[in-house]
Length: 276
Ligand SMILES: Nc1ncnc2c1ncn2[C@@H]1O[C@H](COP(=O)(O)OP(=O)(O)OP(=O)(O)O)[C@@H](O)[C@H]1O
Ligand SMILES: [Mg+2]
Image (cartoon, rainbow, N blue to C red; front, top):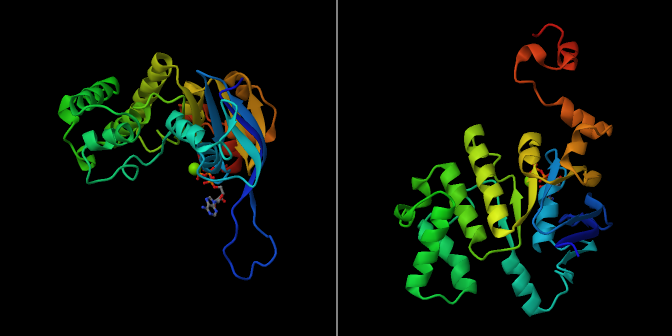
């Protein structure tokens, strides 16, 4: 059984207009089906507005889809009993793009990481502190970081705090929504490396949402391409992305600039003959 199954999910956001007496709402997700196996990372590539974050929210139980099901370990997350839903909430965590708005600016790193532990674990004060220090060290920070506030961190360091919080309850699946997109290239690489290590060490699974082909390729095992709410391609192996003949994928591939201007696509020169 797959860890997570998305079955024929369709969703649109309702219009709040009082003149909208007919259902004119736009479909944001159309008939999406995919699955994530335990210990693997499914990357979801798509342009801005494709519906990636909406699918992430649907999977996290934050946006109930109009049609279809989300099965986590075989349980429908929207109809499961309270006990099962509480367990699913613990096993399903998230890291968003904007590390600063994901945390309370008035909380220290210790308080930020303590929150989920206090909600789910019954640890003594000393046990909790030891657990938080271990988590900080696991993500490349140290005990000295316990008392620091979000504004005292760089974006990359704060994303490490968000990752520590996400793994604090040893979840099964983490939704990573553009979690490295606002970081510089070197920091992106370091965070992706950390995520890859944590995946191995804790047997984690990821749903890695991004518009960036390079980061998707670096971390994913399987890969899907979302375009205007439709899953246009789903590959069992990420390498298939590079041989796909689907026009949307070809266009995405064409947008990757070569490292050196001399080798950049001829199409770019054809479109702008006076440039280069
Ligand atoms: N809460 C909302 N209410 C109404 N429409 C929304 C809401 N959230 C998203 N949308 C719309 O749904 C569509 C898909 O948005 P979504 O945020 O899922 O895209 P995305 O692929 O994550 O884009 P990006 O790469 O820019 O983050 C967009 O047209 C967006 O305007
Ligand atoms: Mg998004």
